[in-house]
Image 1: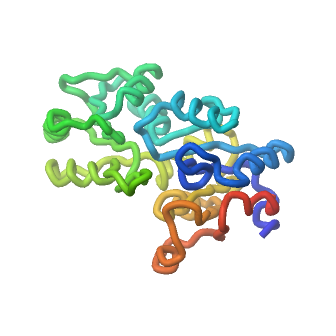
Image 2: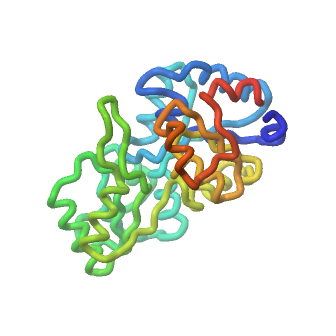
Length: 260
């Protein structure tokens, strides 16, 4: 497999289930970053989880011994902010999101409002209430544009799964009849944002992750290489029954050390 990765310059790494499990790096993950740095290649962490800010992820990775900053971590929230700044400049937003996500939006100059917004943005809001749902649906029915940060139906946690933004999307659409513009993986908005941020084309990118419908689909659907690791959400049975096929699969991120 070495020849497949020989000309790749950027490795876009999923986080939970790919680089770490809960608060512990997967075996070989830190060594893989060292190999990339020694060979003058770049890496970028990307997560669809928009419940936390980039600052939160910097702190989490720092606790694992990774020196990360706002230039090496992206999230679906980041992509949504960039989209709003570039394509919806000056629009007022009703944000269904955690305090961390709200802080991230405001720090980038996005105007948040509870009254007659131009856009309703649905994030992974673990503080979601019926009042928020009611307001959001009302604004969408009244003509506000509907945007969601990412499509994941569930978020893996220690004891199972918790409903994620994709599940909320279905509820909002069922109520309003409106489908949102969706950011994050596997959509092209994310690839375009990474290209702008790094100056590296998608043909030189490798997406590494554990979820077929997001981490792998974004690479396959957008002209990049997609590597599936078997340390997270996908098992062999799921891979066999899926129509989404990675460029190749490996046991874990440690397997990439020899390939690059």
